[in-house]
Length: 407
View 1 (cartoon, rainbow, N blue to C red):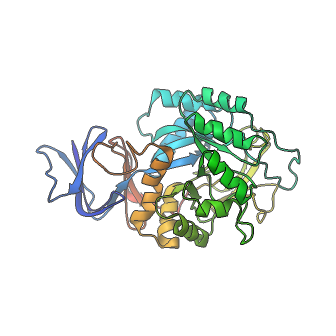
View 2 (cartoon, rainbow, N blue to C red):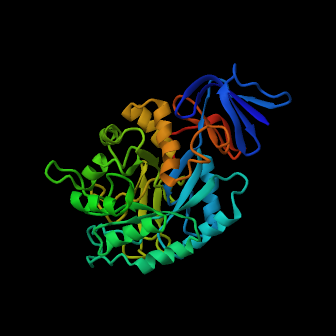
View 3 (cartoon, one colour):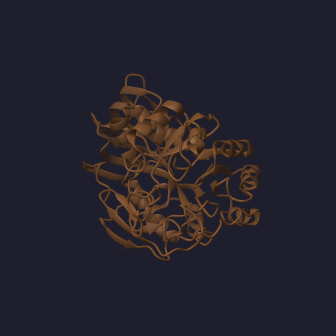
């Protein structure tokens, strides 16, 4: 058994001073004040002092990292698992947009977590049911209908591990696909669409309960045309993802989202791709990336100063950003120091809320007895000193990993 002592623990629903976490194997035995929680005789003690113990972070929208896309096979998935562990992410959903790419994730999910890895909890499919962005120079062909047969092919390929399925309700047959997604027990998510407010609410009535990367690639809010953003802000039936890397969404808009949704209905996501963890440069991802709208594309990306842009698009063009390169621990920092949330609440958006969004909060998402021993050790600035997954220390640094460095 292991006892982790700390002067500050965030569960994240509670803040405890002079606390202890007792860990037995892969699970948490007890959490409480040191004065009220006896440490068994012979127990190993790890005293982190003034550093903060918090729940491991959970990312329900992640395409890859460190040069690997999650769609590129089992070893690529495990490489992502290892990199995410160094960034404080203890659980995640593989975000994959094509049938062929599903195989590697399913293989890893069958085999289970390996040493030094974060834990994959399932698959999030963003694509192929996405309305085209129609950026300058791209195809102007009309979008393909959302075919139920295609959805069932994904459902079968995922072998029970499909957690979330994205769909634009403005696609032909989009609402019917949303109904089928919910009927088959998969979380239906809005993504990449130009639906108006009324169509968005019809999608909610059809069973949609989750909004992918809120604000990004969707119709914005105007006082006479509230759009998808207006629906997401005001509909209590939906959980809203937020890419809080400081580039995809302005801090004022992040603040608006939390003020409208409250602390229960927002979850932070990274939306990272293979460029996360790599140095600035030009990356040719041709043949490696699915655009989610028309299939394979020849894609060249430029990573510079914390963002990744499509090389053939103006940097000021809406839709030119290509995913993110920042793990969600950066979002925790930004929600605290750009938006002004207490650290406890920022952590909640990236742990317990994310676990609830994915339906996995029975075993992860908070520091509670009988949940898996997934936790991080950070400081007040959210620099990372240790990551633990299922009782295993998978990352440790005396100097701390800066939340402001992505590579």
